[in-house]
Image 1 (cartoon, rainbow, N blue to C red):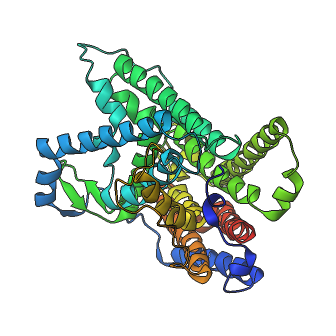
Image 2: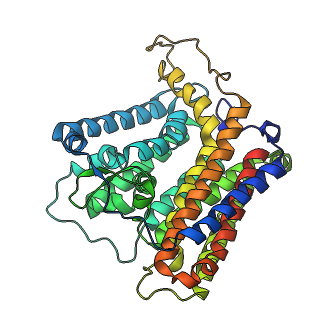
Image 3: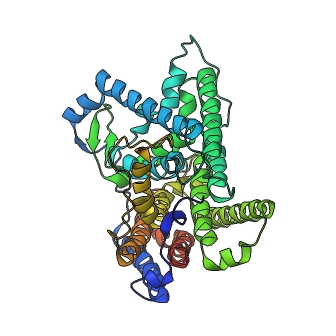
Length: 437
């Protein structure tokens, strides 16, 4: 994706406030130390998903019909603006806000939105709203075993467009992709009903996964509660499709770091268009495959220790531990996209003043430029490393709590060694990638 600034605007290795080797060793050690501390003092599962402080006033506001109608209207307006600028605005990525609105405001912006507000996208989802306009007395049953694989397929297409297709930021390409994606999901929503969006709409599924780590959740009585975020994370569905979704997210973000490194650009800089697509597609597949194999093998190796009967769902041990990848996926996204969002996100506002490229100045900010000075490279590097370490520590805590549920106390530490090794590898690899980008 070639926008006005290099993709994601990640600083180079020289931006790290400490030497790379020290950053990698320190982060890996922090994850390992947290694991051994947990093994010594945490022998029973502690996360009670049913607990939390009731938020009666907020529940009344969120569940109010007018509030929900306003959210739906906001979603429809945002969707219409995105499509309108993509189809009818400037054909130049430098002048159209559509690429920034899709890749920055929508894809990156859903992370803080879901973490702060919970699964709010479900209420504002314009595709769900449009499909709901077609009234039907009955819907087809979703195919058996479909799980979350449609959402995984949609995510794969989006990530390929972003990371492997050289014209991914072209407004016409954005228009075609968004229109096609919307048409497929609206049609499926009409045929299969609202349940389709829960498993088939990539953006909604992604938002729901992120919202598991939000401090806002629903109690047993459907009231909003203020909860321990890790307790919400423990309610993650144990489905094979969720495992695929999280591994795809991690692997693609890893490839994004690799593809922005100087070594990769030197090797691929002279490739033609077809070669570029082929090499980047293979690189994306390889990165996802490596992450998937590492996580699945680590999870399954814990099966060498006997699991409590009936404690594992349909997705097996990888499904039992997949929730621990959510904070890691968020950490990788923050590390890779933080500076990109802070800088390129401003461009979404600046270009909105002339959304169709007609020489307008609707917001009165014509001539204003991106402020690159408000964040130093040291702050960016600190956020990157801090996010990776915190995300992996939270991942270790989540995995340990689940292990305390699955394994007997005398087997608890030994059972988790493979997962610990995977977490340390993810931590070290994540820091190495952001420093090399």
